[in-house]
Image 1 (spheres, rainbow, N blue to C red):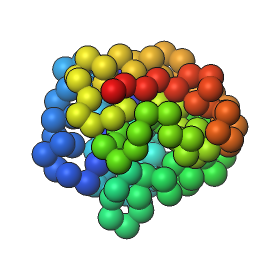
Image 2: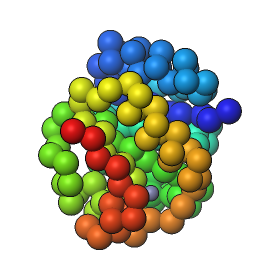
Image 3: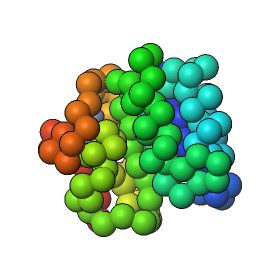
Length: 141
Ligand SMILES: [Zn+2]
């Protein structure tokens, strides 16, 4: 079973996401900010991380940095879910994220992207604009 860690500070959105991915047959963990998400990632080793960007304590960018900087977690696939970026934003690849999903994102798109990342499994990341984005970023509009 795919274990998905969701970092999202807005309770309503986190609940909806949890329902969507639970229905899709995944085991879902939720954290209300990046700091707690990182602690949960260290403790539970999720298969995929889905993170919001704007969050208290530690934002999504810093969460990605922390995961990529941890030897045990570095290869974990990460998707960003946000309304703050435009498709193709170079910072997504520079941060070492695998996919950018834009709010509001249709449920079937959410599930197919996360499933794709889970199926692809852990993989190395380069930290340049031409890195992960060029190889497998999926963008929705
Ligand atoms: Zn990746």
